[in-house]
Image (cartoon, rainbow, N blue to C red; front, side, top):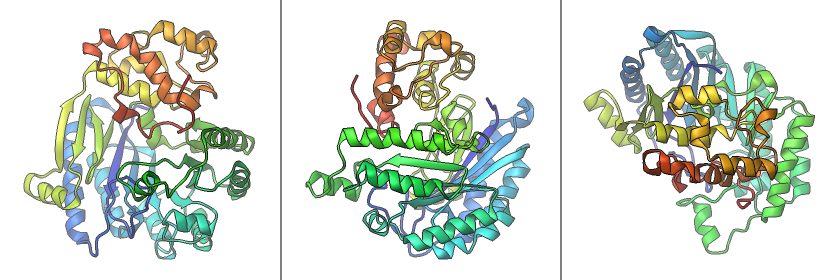
Length: 415
């Protein structure tokens, strides 16, 4: 597993706010591009001074421009951030540089310039292959624009991923099967397939609460989730994380840094980070973050040393999302807690017997959820950590509900 540092750059602006989205994204009439670039560079320099990679021998292994809609950034801004990152940190020779992009014709026209700036991987927000579904999801593109943007992306970048959302209102398993089959025919090396979830504070949440929005039931949601894994596997894109499927060489190295509890720097409004066992959180509102950087040289809202117990809880939460699970030695190195201390042994054996965890002796001691277990990730974490938590700093190893929400497949939640 890579010990490289990952860099996340948050661009908080969008053309419109999608009704299902609870990310830190904002619609603004205008953005002072020069001012924002200056602030992002300053925020990044602040973090670089604290990571100390030149002393440890680590390298910067990935850069991820997320949002919001980072494809709204001028390519010159992206180029300047990449250039500064390469000056501030020793960079891996095969550094992965990802840009999230919307498939509008205006943004797709910039793909060549983004590639020239150094971006070598694009993650395209297609979300659906149906015009009525795109309209329901509030997407600013139609299917023709999405497919044209995908074609442009495949011509400009060595690695392309795209997102799809399933379990949409009115969608059946047969609908999803046909849609996914078409998606797999495009030949991309990575697909992220997410179940639609209703997040508090979104427009969909308000409609759902009023009974004006209905999602497919649990059984159909589970069928879609399991179908996704089987179809992607058959197409040569096996599941490597609950919602992500890729050819073996095309799994997202940046996201694996999160899931394996590696170090990552987060800059920009609302960005989280983990460096040297310290958690960081940036100010969320764009204007507040911008003013803070211009005043203090960084946009930090909070900085806190992560206790071994909290680290173990977070690493357990993230690692069980991966198809290859959690390796004990890596877990101990990253958290300071032995895996067999972080999990309840009796619960582990029971869950293995029920078929939700792979038998430890069959996976070299790793903690690995089976295909059946991946539909119950939240529940597995709660079961595994419940008894052991009491012995670790008063129980703070147990993930809180706030940490759990939105981090599972969204299918069944009871054992």
